[in-house]
Image: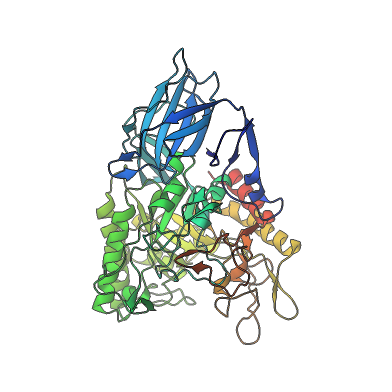
Length: 610
């Protein structure tokens, strides 16, 4: 992963120290603790000077990344990233370095221009080096049948950034197979919901003039609104864990509320759809891209509601216009970013006869075509077609489109028994993958079996599509005699054992092109009562439900995280709002690693994922 320097003030001392990554450790010896390691480098430094600010095609450079390559083109120095200034100091790259590449970065993570400096007898001439605009990289993801399953082919084009060699030619096109390994990521500090501040459903948006974003959670480096504090570095941590994939649930572009007298009023749909602030997500995507060095690809969530997908949903004209606008605007915003791998159109809006054609979840036999299911699948296909029409369909820029549904046994049964040409599947030409949210304790036959009735693995022909496990995980909690949630080494061990036993069943199946572990971090706000201040075991009347698929028997949403959380130092009480004065309160809530789970998942991904 890329090494990033700290920001030094004054004269350099006897040694220059910089760290690997930018996260912070709060778990005491866990994986995050690796981020506090430092490396001491010779005090000899080079200075890069620039007479003023640099802008490339209207975009401002805020950092400089320096890499050194030897005579064979092998990287022997860096990458080192320093904040952009008129005078920037970097460590001596060593005698082996014959070429320095200076990448001029947006958001510290995306190269806009490059200066190449060759070593001369006098060394490197770094006084106002000549930067040349780069052709921005693009990525495309294609589905290719492969025996009993599928491969995803990643095509990267444009000027290459990142990598261990200088075998990088302008306009070069590179292709390779990729499988997605990562986690669901929807961070929420204690006493905070993602529909708050502002109500757009995510915490990944760029800062606006008056509203600061949540880079404090996912970002690396110092915060522009709090120069004394670094971001928690969630994305860098996922990268260090070997993840190459994040599933987000929502990355929409406009607030889903109205404003009256300066107050947010949730519920009413904005009319016109673009009535309020346009929120973009460039800085988050740049963080994931990491200037092409071990990028973490993002599945962009577009959470279409039931009112729009169900024929009887009674969506108003303004609501339909809003979501039509959102789908188009979000795709236009992010389609050219190389960190984006695709989109999901909904999450678990599927539990009725619209989604399961004429069949219920219990009795999977039969199936009757009707207007409700025609409308449901037709609407999904229409939106998927809009996305592909906007992104393009060729290998260089195609993004994947799918959904995130419960285990789809009635849907799969119907698809494996109806005559060829049935409208439910011919309507889905622009759906690239089936996303499945699955929680099982023994096997995944209900989804992957090639012979079992109601399994997606039994589908054939054009009905057969690759599968991304859009949620899969095991809670690390138990309940005491008072039905209150607790966690200890034994409950974590049992959850880790489930990971070790179950994940390899997915990684070896050629139908599965990706896995999003549920989830990266706990989210306490989901637990009743909302805005919970502590774990509790409140469930339906008569106690919390037993779930035999969970290793500790309970399906506590607050305990699926690879990392748990606690109140940050920026607040004295969990009842305090974590977003005050139009910015997150810092330091933000820290994460504590469940090292048993992270080790098990890292090993399963590393050992088994093709």
